[in-house]
Structures are given as structure tokens and as C-alpha cells.
Length: 402
Image (tube, rainbow, N blue to C red; front, side, top):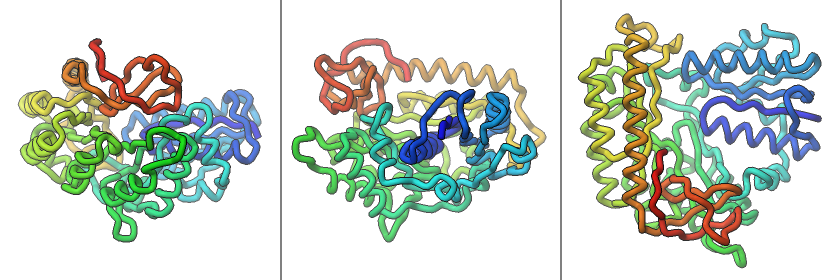
């Protein structure tokens, strides 16, 4: 079968899409352009109204690409409104995320294929799905359902297989990763097991390192901070820690489980344990009712906390969420102005974070045309290094954003 996989949305979607592609290749399939494909898989996102539009557009493009391909639609947008996609064309098949493995069964060889071209140095493992929170701007908890976790034994087996195949950075991903819990093992306990089981592989150089992807601040436990601090870089001293707003009032109206002061105290404790910690974050600007004072509080807080990168999102109304019903929506021009200010600040914060690392040594995971530091900065490929290497480098002076 000739196929194309179209991925939309978050890093978890990316892992799921990679798994689908690897499973199809393991069954003898071949990845081709959309115009040549017998099967087009569209993995959708629904985090914002704009994401929904992109999902519908992607399905229409797949249908127009040729007159015979089957279009398999999965992911969060299809979970919220499957009928909308089914009604587009008889060639559309909607498959819920939980049943995707039945429709496209995996294969023992699929894992090895994920270590092929494009997956060799860094590979992600989805260890958790779903969310038990209900932020007022978000509908993902409806699309994904309650929080669930992959068994620790399965995660460890998959990580060991990737490490034996040559992976040097293994990224743990999930919708609400910090809620990971399997048979009495939390996220910190899972990392302990992973470090122990991948400590050495004869003749394969340095053991792999692990990176924790986005994690909610209230889920950062003392044990997690401890294992990051004492693992000597095998658990990357980098976290993506969503803030969303620097105003405690706005955070409360978002139904976030912390205040701005609490968040700042958490980050201060983390910097005390790990002075060279790198933190990136998400910020929403223009949430309903956000005043100029609220925005300035956000701007001042992210600068005080010295983030290395800001992912800035102008609030996008998502039908079906409490925030969408509010009458105090912020003007689009105001949202664009605030977003532009924070993006400029993000570039400056990224430059500052990089410059404070100049002259220090960090391990870099080498890919074909770039290398990624422990602190999540891209640097040139070191001399004599090859794709698949994990090597120490002295950070050299150069301007760097996020």
C-alpha cells in the first residue's frame, strides 16, 4: 500500500503519526506523496478553533489530491465531531484514537523502522494519554478522555529497544505527562527505572539520555527535581513548563491549579537545585477579560523567570469551552499586539539563555544537519561527529533564539 500520513498538532500527535507510518511500512507499505497515495491518514488537532479549521482543510486537500484514496481521519478533532468528517465524502473513515491500533496493527519490526531515516538519534515514546483537568479554554480533556498511563514495563522495554538500536535521546511524551502513574510508579520512578536499564550497552558509546517533554507545574514533584539534578545530564535539565498567564486572577479564571506567586516559587526552587536549568513555557495572551495590567504582569514574570523560550498563543475561541461563552472577549488587534511583544521578548530571552552557557560544556545529540544541546539549543554539528552520536561540546559564542 502507498500511503501518506498528515500530522497536525502537538508532540503526542507527532509520536502517534510516526507510529502509524512505521506500522504501515512494517506491513510492506511505502510512504509517497498525497497525489499517489492509496491511503491518507490525517491525525487531527482540536486545541483551538483555528486547529479545527486546519483539520477540515487537510481532509479536503486529501480528498482533492486524487479520486481513489481512502482518507482515514483520527485524532482530537474527529473525536469531538466525527460526523463532520464522515459527511465530507464516502471515502472518509473516522477511527477513534483508541482503536487506531486495531485498524493499523503494529508490528515487532515497526520499532526498528522508527530508528530508520529521520528517527535515528532522537526518538519519542508516548507514555501517557488523556487529562483529568478542565482548563476553561481547553477541550482536549473531552477529546482525549480521562488520564491513562502505559505500563512501566512496556515503556522500559521500548526504551531499551531504542537504546540498543542506537537512540541517544529518548523523549517521554504525554497529554498530561506529570500525571503518569502505573502500578505504583510515578514519572520520577519511571525515570529511575529507565536510567538503570539503559546504563550501559557494550560497544555503543555513551548511554542514552532522557528528556521530559511538557509537564504541568503542579506535577513537578521534589523527586522529579531530584532525579534531574543528580543524573548528570542523563535526564536533561530542561523542562517545558506551561505558565499560560502571569496574572493570578486570569489563572484562576482559566481554572489553572496554581497562582503566579506559587509558580514563581517553584521555578526559584528548581533553579536553586539546577542553576543551569533551561525552562521554556506556554503563554496565552488575550484570554477573555485580560487587562493591560494582567498582560504586563505576565510580561514581567516571564522575564524574571528567565525562560529560554516562550510559545505564545493569542487566545483562540474554542466552541464547547466555558471561556468561549464569555462576553468580555479581547479585541483581535490587542491580542496580536500583545503576542508580538512577547515573541520579541522570547527572542531576547533565548539569546540571554544561550549566552550564559557560552564556555560551558553540554552533551549534544547529533542529527544529520544539526545538534541539540541538553538545554534545548540547536548548535552546529561538532567536528568529526556523526549522526547518532551523543558527545560533549563547549558552547561557542553566537546569537541564538529559541
